[in-house]
Image 1: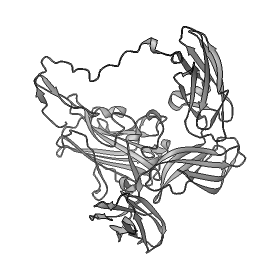
Image 2: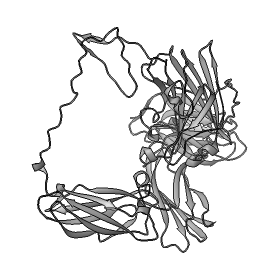
Image 3: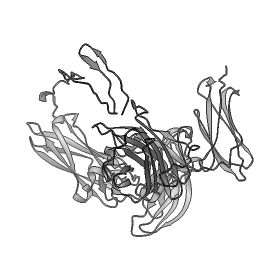
Image 4: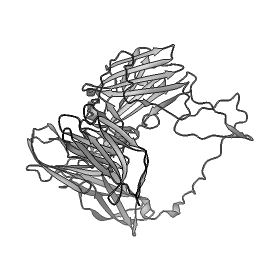
Length: 562
């Protein structure tokens, strides 16, 4: 396993570089092994005399038991219809009494009463300072910070920061794909005991706000979904806010987030294709695939090629793994320790989650050919329970070619706890684990966030796309040219279908969507670079209304306009 390399030895010293992937050393013997010197000079010790009086004051916020439930994972859950008291326990580690001004501020639309209080804290003792928190009219249905600080003699103590959230969150937001557009899906849950009526929805992307009339009745405990209009195409990260007007409510229900409006040219598309689960790879050569990689891994030891596809019932995984030695003695949730696969899915694209990794919405699976046959195990993460699934899976090892074919049909219902659907802007990651039975273990991967860290921000963004080819197919081109007062990348696509479609042009210079391009008509757009020229070999991806890629063209000409 891995790629063999001889270390460069100078005298009695051998040097090599390590990273997040495992590195194994072997030699006939290691005589007189000496530990390497420390890589950094230790920091100077801190002298207690250097602390100010304020720095010797420590604050601990304390909430009631119901508010504190699961607070280490999800933050403190406040009742947005009532007043919550938080007690700031202010400890004085000075040798003398100190006078301090204790102040509390909150974000996310929470209001703090008694925001600044003057107190005296006895030497070596503590003083309790109460604050009352209520929900303001601009309350956000997301996690926000409460910060408490003490000022002593003009100096400020270290802040105590607690995460606050509505105990019964009524609005959840998700990046979704609607045809050729990035949109935000808002799911509103009526957490009251009475029916609610939504009369208006507003969506703000950056500085632009669109307000739409809505007519939705929501029964107690029911959930409804609304889609925003198109988000700005291909502009990168953009902040957004969704606000719903509930008739009779004192304020709008709102939440904010970040949308990674990536150029679709850079986002892999997962095609719609049903797979027969029998351990024999379907003919997938015409579909996009991914080769798993890692530094230093020899192809003769381990190679892995994977395909993700989907249909209305399942997310499919096909993997072809060539491994010179196949070892898998484990079952259930332990198969990650030997040969097999781990793959994970998450809603939204990297850059869009503000949650800590341990509470991110993601689901990870372990898939292996075990002594008990092929098994697909869903690992526990966040609020998702772990269990051995009954999903349709197959894994067949060919001892002659030393190749194992893995096939899995993961029902969308297994992904329901994180709200994943084919309309989601999703993220994926996959790892092929390898051990040769000699105590070493390695892997190849696509994406990250599985092996060295559990973090969906390291996954790869994907779009679940249709596999049809009946629109915007016969003509698409891109041409660099001087246009008006400067250079431009001129793009064109033709709608071959019998009905209007939305068409998205995606290039390295940006994205643009033409909505309702008429049947048998052409759509055009000119992208303007920042400088005086358009680089050579610019590419164009044309995407029609169902998010299927329709054409790809390029032009090797570079144009500079004086």
